[in-house]
Amino acid sequence: MDGVAATASGTAWQASISGLGEGPHVFAVEATDAAGNITDLQHDVTIDLNPPIVTIVSPVSPALTKEATLTITGTAVDVSLVSVKANAIVGTLEADANTYEKKFTITGVPLTEGDNTLHVIATDAISRTTDKTILVTRDSTLPVVSVVGPDQVTRSHAAHLVVTATDNLAVKDVAFFLFNAPTTAVVGDTLSLTITATDTAGNIASINKSIRFVAEGALTGQVLLDVNGRPIAGAHVVMTGSETKDTVTDARGHYAFPVNDQNVVMTIDTTINGLPTTTIERVVAIQSGAGTVPVDARLTPMGQS
Image (cartoon, rainbow, N blue to C red; front, side, top):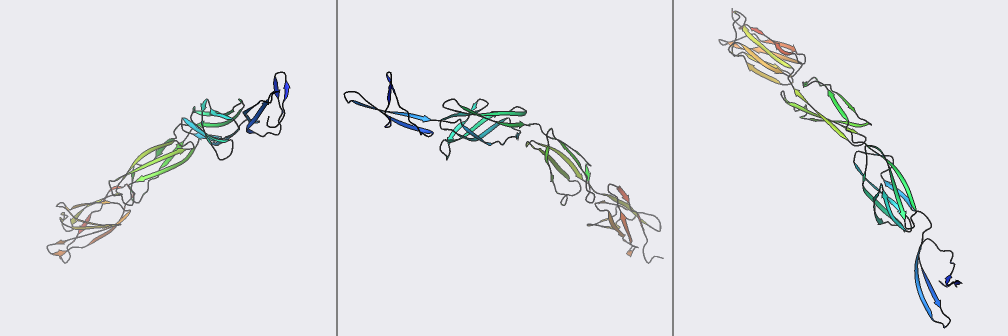
């Protein structure tokens, strides 16, 4: 056999061949009888001296996920590898660049909530096994998010919000998304705020809060004729702040402005029977959310004796 003479043992023949390495071998067997007749036979033998060597690429233990199933990938090295499985699920095998090394992929490995110890078992042709374990924690519980803060905001007074985010394991980050930016919002607009919290497993919870953009307050007043206390219709009223607004008084001498500033300058004047009146100019301070601030004025026609 392979040039080595065999010795008889009863009706059988045997030969000892040393120095063979792992892997497949083809032995040539030649038998000769007393008459010189020869029969040749080839016999394939695979030598496998070691159990499989398993390397898990993904996931890296300990792992954390929110998913109900898991995919495990890695490599297994063995001369006669038969299978790689995890929790009774058999993976697919494909050739790798190195001899006797195969890549494996095991999909759909089920997970229970909490800690899971998964056994990845590689088996070769002579039933030797290698068992690698990985710890995977499944957390499908969403974070809990709450927000406390005002439902209204003005241009000069920001809203202070307190956001609380908790999780059964740990909160990774909290993000704020504001729609209808305050720089472009006008009185009456609603600002939509979405707050999201993400935990370390990737679970995301969100909460929405609407904040109405309101005026700081309102300026109202009545303009009267100083000499007799009668209301002046058509008096010119100008309010100057971050923007300038003007109006005229109604038949009862009334006017009104919404106010978005903390300080404005009011200027009031008119003409009566062709004569200009005195001009009233006042600086008005308005507290946030003060509501209606009355600013009345009394005008006197100039040049009237």
